[in-house]
Image (cartoon, rainbow, N blue to C red; front, side):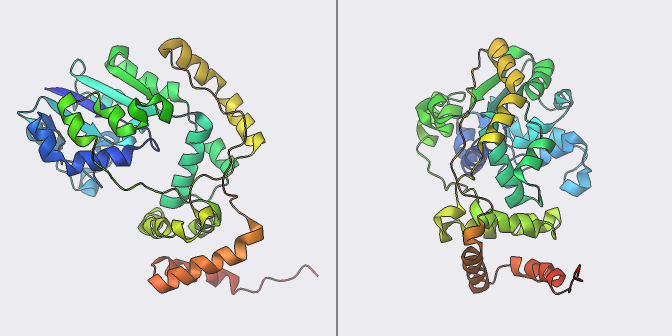
Length: 329
């Protein structure tokens, strides 16, 4: 049996692919492809990656012999397909070898231009986690060196077994992530799954994202994740609440300089040319103080009408504002 290990990265259409794989497990199986359910969380093998990182198995609801269970589930198939963007964050990919042995495994990773990647990652971190950093702070604390990550997988599996793809519309087969990935599976199944349409995962932007960033100061990671979908539901309240955030020229220049060696090494070692963005990214201001008051009215009115869970955390935040701070006078 061969293994196909899809390791991300995040913000490269992973959720779309994983939902198609999970919802079409029976069809995949007919073509000799297993998409096992061991370690599945929200259609992806996130708990498999966490187990490989050393997270306690009882916290993940997994048994001590989970690797044997996963292999048993794939038995009788030609390919075992595993997918999680968390795989690419494993610091020592050699830890994956007991699960996916060298010589029988292909690793597929999609990467993006650094400025676009960091910005998208930043928006995701605010929406789904309790990050309260500014974009500049996020850039400082979240390195995005593609070569460092890729080299670890090459060392574990060999360069000939690591497939690096550019997540950029013009670089994808048929300008589509699903069609691009399916070329590595059976051509016949590609004709079936390429037709599947799935809902997109909207990016939160503008003052809606700014509100979540402020609220995150008062939230745990678990609490933040529990209301992430409520913010997704509000993207359509205003055109500025979805899509990209604005990235200034000085931030673009900084990212371009910071990852110049990464782009050079990708080109020299993989003939992989990522052209750095050299102009500001147009998008919604985060924050946009000129419209903050009316945007907050939209957000709070809708949240109250929908009885969103986030309101209880707004009450927690409001406790601080009830305190009367002493004047310097």
